[in-house]
Image (cartoon, rainbow, N blue to C red):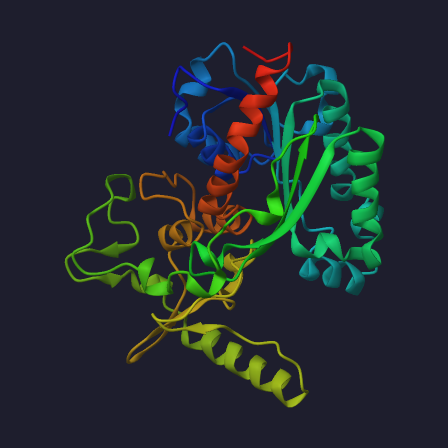
Length: 358
């Protein structure tokens, strides 16, 4: 997917990952002029899907955002960023606690990246921004973490701030709650909390994203994941006997202890748990039931669909890297709806301003 030559606004894509947020805002009339992503494998996927960036003089691509000053960020109308969530996620906090390590803003690396975002907003003063993170950001450290974010963006920088927890289950068959933080530099009638978004209970089921017999062959997948003539998924995605035994024993042990830990076995008419970046390890949170066989993992293409990426999205990396990338991404159609709702307010703000980026 590439931006057209005409656009209504420009944007910077920070912590860009594989470009899920970018796809949504390009579809809403935006043009990306600045991208930052530090992971080389995510950059490979991003570049494979936004190929014209390399020859565009109005686009800059940098790696680690901490390695440049806010002044070096290209001027833009809208700032977008899914800043790293591990310091605030439930799983991330539990892991860090177990290891005796800091989390949240006490994390000496990832936790400080919000402040890089804040400094860029302060330096560039975009007309609007959208930030995305895990639901737990709002309750982390008894709400103090989110209070700091609000204080920095609203009280220190003067942006009109709104936030809302959105569940991707309204668009794809996955229970995935994320917080969206929207800010406008000037007063606006935009209201994130009253947007009419699909209800989670009315969303599609997992059969909509699974490979099936007769499915059109995706040229850039080259039969990598399944055989469309038979509908048979490559056997390598079926759990080994040892792994399946281990997962069952692990779940039984935790059930006996009164804990809720265990694998997530999914049938076609169900929805899945949240796809995580650790999915490559054992696939335990989302296992597809197979009649007469052990369960299997989703293929990377099915993960792409679970996140709302269309089949023309190119997956140039290994399965391990693809699982990490989709587990870290956004539910694209959810961001599409929010981007489309923000668009007229962005355009209106730029029309009333003298500093629109051409």
